[in-house]
Length: 202
Image 1 (tube, rainbow, N blue to C red):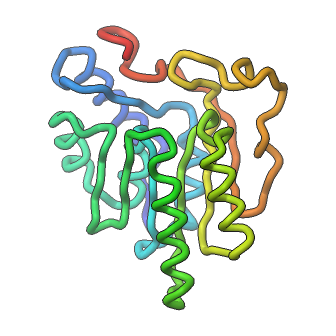
Image 2 (image 1 turned 180 degrees about the horizontal axis):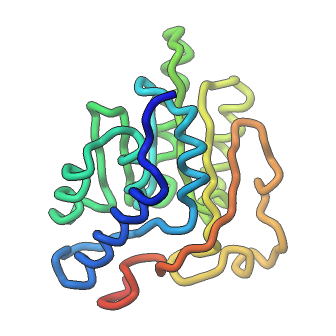
């Protein structure tokens, strides 16, 4: 099994970024992880170096677990690229556009299948994004064409400043119990949707 960062290392990295943000060292939005370290580590035990990883604006953990050096990720965040971290060398891309990563990830999976490839695509989305039509259509296409892709739905109960279940007036999200090409998990985080809670809330 490949070496992965530990939960403690991930938390330490995000704490450092939060302190940088609160001390006005980052002049752009940041979206921090917290509370889902074990879930992420378990997922990345199955992510191979040649696999593709597509993320949202919250992608620090994915970049680190995919093997991007910590100092490189931190410098790019300090340079204002937190919500658009892309590392072609590591097959990892992030998009700050809601649902923006989904069709690209699905298309990449289609390309892999057409070319007879053996690598896999991992597409991370938030809970509100998973309720959109764009997500459903791509998931349905991937199911019907049996594409080598897994969609990871990370439910922290937040969409900007709203609670997803309240918006849709439901007790359960649509894909909460779906297992076909989907990994779904819920977690609670100490951070707001954007920022670190002290300087500014976007």
